[in-house]
Image (cartoon, rainbow, N blue to C red; front, top):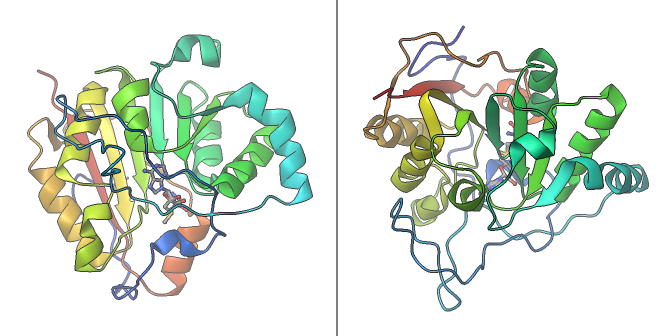
Length: 273
Ligand SMILES: C[S@@+](CC[C@H](N)C(=O)[O-])C[C@H]1O[C@@H](n2cnc3c(N)ncnc32)[C@H](O)[C@@H]1O
């Protein structure tokens, strides 16, 4: 069971010079880049961008095509469990067809952890957000194949989901597994886990809710420890967690293991007051 702060250590990191995000494996996705024209964010201080100055996103706009089987699964499943990211508050009780603790997974990739953790936590409503359409299609295939009832998927920028689609103090948990490290200094502004994102996540967690982060990138781990540790609404978890911390090894993590990378893991709790 992971402990608060640094958790796992299985060797050195090997991709500190990586130019592109660590997720670069999958094919590029289509236009999911943030360009929503909205201004400001009094709530969190995070800049939303404008038409002239679109927000810097933690992902690149990429294209990727689906296999015929993925497309068929998409056509069947997307209307049932998928939605595009928008600017309207979600009615998750209606969408999931029940009221249950809500856990948000940011950057679900191909959905390996999403599907496994949803099966392990049938009492949880799991919302997966990803910009990469082929990854979402793989998750839809798993949902259909294993008849998983408690996952819904959103396609687009998770920051917009946090800002617009989930209410303050409504999430039981947030998971961020292997966020793109953007290792070059000039790209650090693209990192998902900035001070403003920690503040935004903390504001969406209910008191006692949990943020679970894992990374295989040593320098990003230091950044996460420092920036996340400075968020006053988050603290080391010293109460029983409302969600599991047991992660399956994802495809991406498996690669990191085989490369001998260190996995660092963080668990914070939203302070109760
Ligand atoms: C390195 S991959 C890790 C995927 C998965 N969590 C895993 O462990 O295999 C990071 C993923 O985050 C997604 N991503 C990055 N920024 C995002 C954002 N702002 N909103 C939604 N997804 C994002 C990328 O598309 C990519 O699939």
